[in-house]
Length: 326
Image (cartoon, rainbow, N blue to C red; front, side):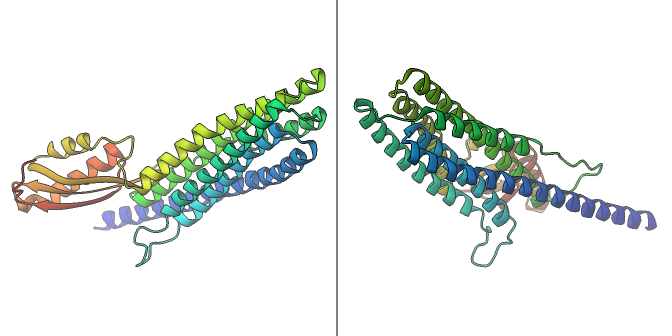
């Protein structure tokens, strides 16, 4: 008895230590994200002012990229903070979906910006205005420095390691969710370096050859680069809001895995959806031969869903009879 009590105390101590370390790790991630957001926001303002003063459409198009980064970073911070808020009686899933709504709004704004840039570029192709090449190069070079700094901050995420396993599913899910968000923000900043490089190229061409057509051509390329990833973001957001099945999970495979459990004879009304990025849920009815083994079957189902499919939110109803054919 004394030995079991000591083991429980040690396990509790390990869990509390893991939570403290993970909270510290999360605070470091949030601090880095805030630093990158501040840098990116300041540069965005500088870039817009420079674009208006030089008349460079390429700089304005790259500012659209930077706006995507600012919105993406703000969205990540917003999602992390809201994801930690507890559920309420009115919002039983918590506030995870705010991230998806914000992502959808961000996508709409970016598409409108891209359409405007394409329209303005088309107009300038026939009448390219005179543009100052040197200020374009200077501002874009500063942008490269900002992007490299952001990549360095977001890319240096250390992970804590603890010898014992922690059985807190929500802690692990939140950690994975935050890591995915930080990785997404890193990729956004990485992609934006291409925009800055494009503006530098346009500035060099204009400065050396006076070929002003380079500015609208580069801006068209940047706008076309924004559209596919924006459309992909909107599609994912709409798919989640429509409670579609996650792209990395096969309902048929989930069903067959449950049917392989001893004592299970049928699965029906199976629904799989995403609450927010990185957090999936499932509900369904499972027919068993022996109702006395219901708890054992439930444990087996939850274990398979968690380990094989990374689904930690499951609502399973045990049934003894299903009249409709599977």
